[in-house]
Image (cartoon, rainbow, N blue to C red):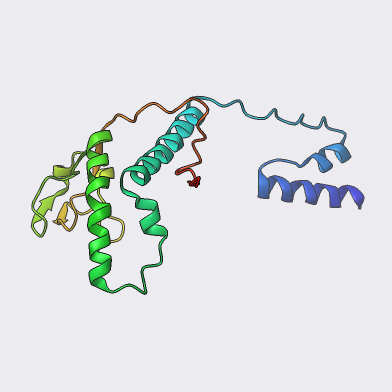
Amino acid sequence: MKRLILAVRCFLKVLGRGRLDDELARELGLPVRAASPSPVPGPAAERRERAIDGALQTLALLQREGRLIDFFMEDISAYPDEQVGAAVRTVHEPCRQALRRYVGLAPVIDGVEGTYVRLAAAGDPAAVRFTGNVPVGTRPEGGVLRHKGWRVTRIELPPREAGEDPNVLAPAELEVE
C-alpha cells in the first residue's frame, strides 16, 4: 500500500510541477538536486540597472531644473485653479527646457490628432496601443489618432558626481544662519 501511495504522490507531483520535489526524491533513493548557484548578473541585468539609473537621473534633473517632484508631491486640492495654473507655468518651462537639453523626443506617429491613421504609419506596431471598440483576436489596420505618442531619439545625460547616490533625487537643503 505504501508503494501505491508513493506512486500516486509522484504522479501528482510530476503532473502538477513537471518534476519531483526533493522530499520525494529522497524517499525514492534518487539523488537530490544541488541548490543552484545565485545568478550572475549578465547583460540584461546591467541594461536594467543602467535604465533605472538613467530614469532616476532624469527625475533628479527635472527636480533640479523645474522642481517637478516638489510640484507633484504638493497637495494642490486646497488651491484655486488660477493659483495652480500660475504654479504650473513656473514648473513647465524649466522642465521642458531640461527635457530638450538632455533627451531627444519625437512623436511615434507624426499625424494630425483627430484624423484616421493607418497602423503602418507608426513603423513599429508595438509602439501603438488601440483603445475603444477593439475587435477581440484581431489587430485593426488603423484608427483615429488620439495621441501621437513619444519615442526617445537621443539621451545625453550629464555625468554623475563621484560618490553621488543615484537614489537621492534632490538633497535636503539646510540653511546655515
